[in-house]
Amino acid sequence: MKAPIAAALFAVTASIAADPQLIEKGREEEKRQCVACHGLRIINVQRLPRAGWERELDKMIRWGATLNDRKALMEYLVANYGDDKPLPAPPLSRDASKK
Ligand code: HEC
Image (tube, rainbow, N blue to C red; front, side, top):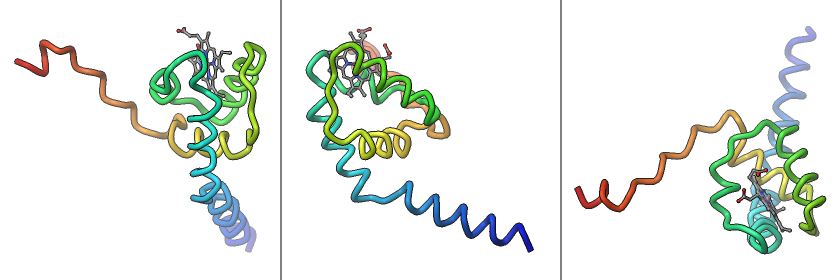
């Protein structure tokens, strides 16, 4: 009888983590707070586990980034750029796209 309870708890936790409104707030937070020093691409090509994103945010804050909504940004990063997500396609050079 333990497994169904664990499964139900997991489902609840997963649905909280995937709250689309929170993730959307996180996307806005990234656009506001993460572009002062570099573009979004350097962020969005990463694939990190949750702990990796926590460390990454700590590092950016040490370097001068400010955050208004760390929780939303974290959920957005984990939902889109977690280490369970497929790697982005490598950018094509101009020559390759011209053929
Ligand atoms: C105060 C300047 C600054 C701000 C603001 C900033 N970063 Fe950075 N970030 C850097 C620097 C400097 C690098 C190294 C850049 C390079 O190698 O070209 C970097 C690199 C990165 C990398 C690549 C991996 C790494 O650690 O080098 C990621 C991911 C990243 N930043 C995420 C973020 C996120 C998310 C935010 C918004 C919370 C953010 N950054 C805001 C300065 C900043």
